[in-house]
Length: 222
Image (tube, rainbow, N blue to C red):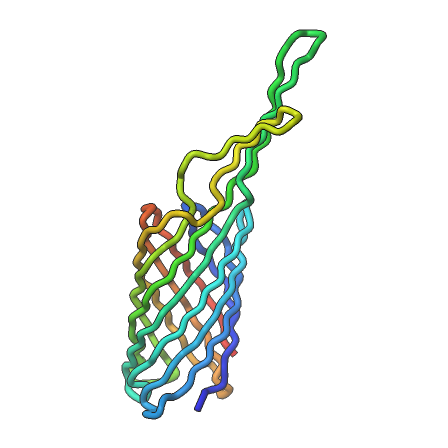
C-alpha cells in the first residue's frame, strides 16, 4: 500500500562546470510498501531552474528500495539519473569585408557562449536515521557513483557560408564518457500534524573532468 505522495519546493545555490547559479526547484516523491511492510520502495523526480549569467536547467529521477522502515535506522539502494544543461548553443561567426575607399579589411566576430551539459546515471546507496528515534526528525546520507556523458573538447567544425561568413561550431553532442562519484545529505523535520516537512540539503560530486560540482538548499514538502 502506498503512502500519499509529497510535492516539494526548494531554493538554493548550485555549482556546475565551475560556475555558480541560484536554484529554484520542484520535486515529487512517492513511497510504497512491499509484502513485508518493514521494507518498501521510493520513486521521485525533480526539476530545477538554474539562474545566473546564463540560464540553465536540471532534471532528475530516482527509483529504489528502502529497508527497515519501522526501525530507527533505514537503508536504501536505488538507481538515479540526472541531466543538467546551462548556457546557449556555442557558435562563433566571423564576417570579413573590405572597404573600397580605404582598402582596409574589416573582420567582425560574434560569439555565443557554448552550452555545457552532463548526463549522469548510476547507483545510490545510503541510510536514514531517526534522530533520538523520533521518526519526525531524519538525517540521511547517500553515496552515488556511475557513468557520466558529456560533450568532448574536440576541435570545432568550421564552415564558410555562401556570403563568406565563417561559422565555428563547438560540439553539441554527449559524445564522451567518464565516471563520477559523490555524496549527498539531507536533514528533514515534520513541522505540523499534516506531515509537512522542512528540509535542508547538501551535495558534492566529482567527475572525470575534474571540476567539483555541488549544491546547498532549503525546501518544504507538503
